[in-house]
Amino acid sequence: MQNRHANRRRYFEEQGRTTQRHVMPFIAPFLPLHAGLSVLEVGCGEGGNLTPFADLGCSCVGIDLNEKQIARARDFFDGHPHQAQLRFIYQDIYAADADDLGRFDLIIMRDVIEHIIDQERFMGYIHRFLKPGGRLFIGFPPWQMPFGGHQQICENRWLSKLPWFHLLPTPLYRAILRMAGESGATIQELLDIKQTGISIERLRRVMARAGWRALREQLYLVNPNYETKFGLQPRTLPAGLGAIPGLRNFYTTCVYLVLEHPDAQ
Image (cartoon, rainbow, N blue to C red):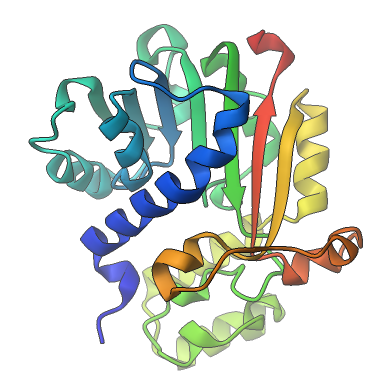
């Protein structure tokens, strides 16, 4: 069976469906979504999350450090009815100038913050790309959740389905990946995620120090994306589990946040 993450068109379509069904309704109470809205996706990959915004007639920009994924994004959106309002940029967001890239009503980041080195620097930087009254959406898997190490990208079918083994000490984790025959690139990506993986508590601290305020936060026991991938109904984390610091990270498969920043007022 082909690895789901190797089938980029399928992954692209899954992203779009999840964003349309779950992300957009989550954001809408705090930012009316309509044609002409400007949307930036940081770490856009092939841009699947932008599909429903593009379909709505929003002005969309995707930026990513992966040149191949940006090339596929341009290919996947070729011929889209609103193609003139779509732009995909191969660039480091830190090298981008707000006057050139633009300022946006909405910035979205799905499954991205856990890949970013120095998250404090990033959260103290990204608000410069928001218009007054703009919003930032973040969706991420806490590091300690069953597949918070992104081991689902492993080629080895057993490791790709093995929960929590990414929490092993780094030398043992690396050794297991090597013995399983994972490529050097996959091992490095998994080790990078192990280094940058983030908990609910740490993200809250980073947000607070950078001046962000959460307008809405939701912890999920069943990730909304699992509906598209596996046919599972999304479920929020029971309030009792969600109130226990530390422990909640092991059972929260996804966190959704809508944020505002005082410098974007």
